[in-house]
Image 1 (cartoon, helix red, strand yellow):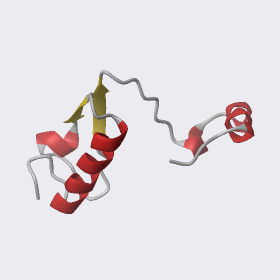
Image 2: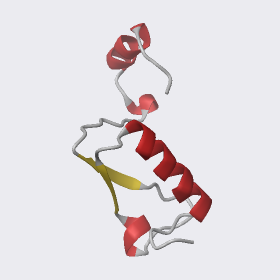
Image 3: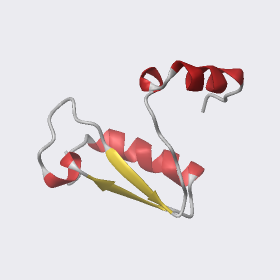
Image 4: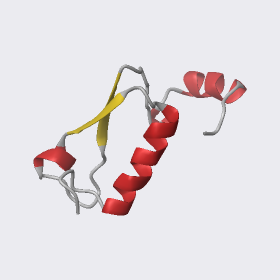
Length: 76
């Protein structure tokens, strides 16, 4: 366990990904994984400083927006 309450190997993998994708940005963790109130199903809240990212759950989007995304997207 780390001080952000995720397994060390997950943190190591995330850091590798961030270094490749947003090398000049700071990535901040916040929320329950930082304040110690997380449970097994808790998500990891992240803020990428210096780089704007919009993360949404596809299943929760309106059908019209899903159709727009499905016209053209890239799997990362």
